[in-house]
Image 1 (cartoon, protein in one colour):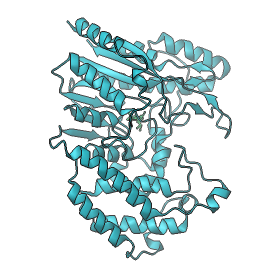
Image 2 (image 1 turned 135 degrees about the vertical axis):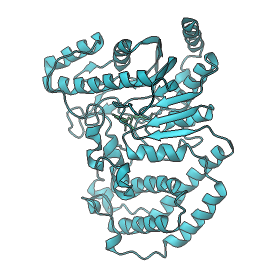
Image 3 (image 1 turned 90 degrees about the vertical axis):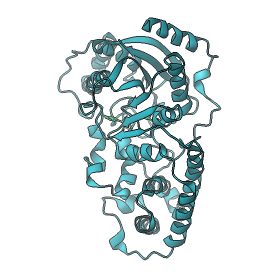
Image 4 (image 1 turned 180 degrees about the vertical axis):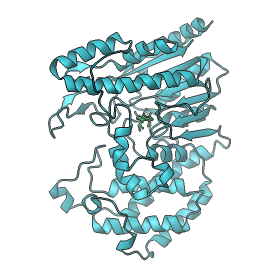
Length: 428
Ligand SMILES: C[S@@+](CC[C@H](N)C(=O)[O-])C[C@H]1O[C@@H](n2cnc3c(N)ncnc32)[C@H](O)[C@@H]1O
């Protein structure tokens, strides 16, 4: 019987028009998806289509899980499809975004509060004692910007109802990013060059107002849905999902990191300035913002190059990398060792017969392509997962590390991605 469903899923995907999965002209910011930028976001329409295809063939599914939820794309889409959604991420900024984006706030309350904030903020008195205390504050922000951000923060803390605050913190966080001295087009923290910095004079309040207006429009759309399914957001490391009961979820839709944060996407670095400004409660910040990247998958290199994982695709890639750079091979191994642990954890919390939809980037290291789709498929067999389907999507409009600097030298670039792989597994 499950094989019949697998066949039906394969057939549905086969019948889709060519380039269906590219979504080149799609609005990726609809609903609440445009609240805040985030590195390597999933295209909402990809999550939407995957969920719809599984729902078409498994009508009784009720729950969705994303252990690497990032900005919460699959949670929002799961919720819109009527599923109870659970997500988790080590990054506190991710949790703030996912919580705010999956909640429908009363638009009238937001409007009244926004008016109050914008009226109040220009009259707030602050001194340097109100400036946040973190290293390099004045390196990343101009003094006038620091003053205005501090005013805004104080206003939000004083006049916004704590219930509404997450919505406003998200807009504040996006504002922090836009008005900082960092190059906004990049996810890693690079300071503007001297010439651009000299001319850099961002308006904090106008930026905040613009972000709020955009986010309120997204919220109003969600609010029109009235009843929304339950949402659960956790701070679990995907390598330890022991607090989630076994066989909890019907469907997984996720995109894991492409590799360790140091050499691929530095989620911690991307979030650092926001987290330093937000001063979240200590329980929300088990790691200092500048230590977050080490806590993620592959944060520490393996101490030896002994492959004990059942993945021929990984073995072949590691051998080829080790032939030119053994240390690099060890770093790569450590990422997949951690990923393997998460696969076991994820398998445990999925219901038998449940489908797992993965969207991955297959990066290059030392000119060797790491077939993460194949590696996950091979590793998952030991946890009772069978492959259902595997295909490519082009990436016309996704900000992701199609190019990076493998040698970490500014200006030295190499192609690292050639599209994404989407694949579906089923738990036996
Ligand atoms: C590719 S992003 C997910 C993007 C997401 N699909 C979206 O649309 O925004 C991968 C996420 O995995 C998280 N992550 C990395 N290592 C983790 C770990 N060990 N446990 C939990 N989350 C982790 C990162 O913080 C990041 O948010």
